[in-house]
Image (cartoon, rainbow, N blue to C red):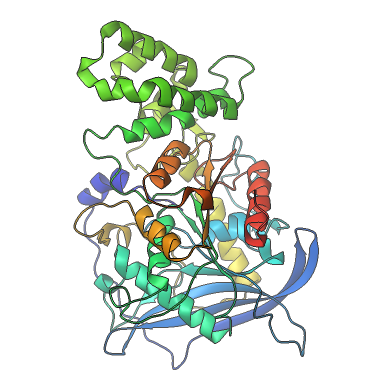
Amino acid sequence: MPIDRLILAAALALAPLAAPLPAHAQDAGPRAFITKGQGTFGTTRMAYDAAEEEFILRSPDGKAAASVFATSYLKAGGKTAKPDASRPVLFVFNGGPGSASLWLHMGMLGPQRIDFDDPDHPQTTAPFHTVANADSPLDVADLVLIDPPGTGYSRILADGTPAMFYGVEQDAVATVQVMEQWLARHGRMNAPKYILSESYGTVRAAVVARLLAGGPTQTGQMDGISLNGVILLGQAMDMAHGAAGDDRGYLGILPSLAATACHFHKVAPGCTPQGQVDAAQAFVDDTYLGALHAGSRLDPARRAAVAQAMARLVGLPAETILANDLRLSGAAFARLLLAAEGRRTGLYDARFTLPLAAAGPDPVADDPAMAQYVPGFVAAWDAYAHDTLKITLPQPYKAIAFRDVNGAWDYGPSPSNYATDLATAMNRNPALRVLVGTGLYDLVTPLGTARDTMAHSGAPADRVAFRTYPAGHMAYLGREARQALAADLRAFITGSLR
């Protein structure tokens, strides 16, 4: 689940600071809740073991500093057979920062998923339902879904502090420690290893990939852990995007605006979203980049022609585009595209709409997508965790911790493009492959920005694959998108993605 730090900055600045996270008593040993299940994944019928497991992260002086929970699904080996040590392991986390993993868990990866296939008419009130999830990649890999400290059931303990975990580097170090503990506990250090991440989780994935190898300037020791692959959904690795005078955001979002305009029939009849994307990207490369670079030097006649061309792509009047100085943000477009119908689109998924007049002050809770799909995920997870996974813990599950985690996050001395961390890991490991997946209707981390970020990272282009899906920031919402992503995940893990 994404949380845009730029959108949230003003809201969090006005909010009262939360008290420090309370200390939580620690049991004598790590807790675990084990259940068994079976299902059909892809075309494979199989039994699996499910485990909600606790991992203890320690301070430099060896004291228990945080309790981290992860949900694992492992192929069952039978009564006497040992687990297959060579079976791939897929480590999974969402983003925020401050988000738990229930979004990927219940939307795409778990043996059960929320029954939520119609973004045009989403169910917004209980009871919500889960269904058997044949799209889960459990047939090709074991799954480990990690909830970082302060999210899900994971908590900072009495001998830990938020500063130990709530920051780019600190968070990545903690994630590496959880992965190492899991691999050692399950005897899987020699297994093929993959990471699947979403939104801010793509920053975590990039830094984790760099840290896993270790080294004197990284972890202080030669850890020697390499990854086979990294999957980035709704990538948000370039935190330097969005500075004053930076036009890259307008260049990157134009293809997504064009796809959205086609989805709502605001451009030429017969368009296709992908066709609009391709046309918009060609326009960016051939015309738009130069026009924005010219700034106030752009000739008025040329400016008018650029606005007319943009109008054909994004479905807004040329006069409106000129009034916005040829620069359309996602937020402005979301208000303008359907204004004549009294509606606004979501930023996190532009297919979702709500009345324009009902726009509230909260940049996340009032977003038409977040407002409508969050309740179903939260309720479905709660029922699934209690009834199926048999989890009985005293602390509530935190889906997103805005103030305590996101509001306290340490991004370091200056914003960075963390894709360079991923490029470092790829250059150390010639076999590491990357899959970048983006929703056509994602106006928060749009597809043009994903390509630009990777193109300027130093990552070897021949080992980076890009895919787009007919969805938003959560690229698995809707049957068509989910099934396409599931097919790509299987192909990526098995080495057959082309």
